[in-house]
Length: 119
Image 1 (cartoon, rainbow, N blue to C red):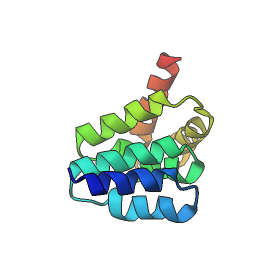
Image 2: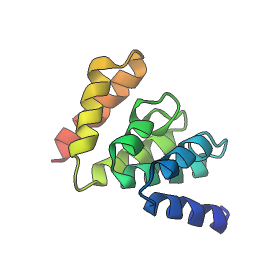
Image 3: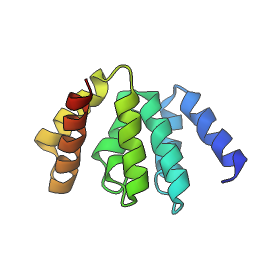
């Protein structure tokens, strides 16, 4: 992978503004390249704020719902590695209880179960 792309994703991860989350979502999670989607999803999880976590949990085809098992699992592993899981648990609960797509609800439930087991 191109080192410049990795550095851009890292820099966007460190920014604390909403625009950085929007750029990661629009360009990173929609990339046709699995590795870029994987790095982007990890960066969004490591931001550990409501808006970034929401991208990788509630959206079809992104983060834990990515069609690439490698991207989905690396996102799950990054979630499991979070020290403060408060916000991610809230979003998982909301997704389980309110999302209109069954597969997204099921994936959220699976990740929540893994979080419970890992504590």
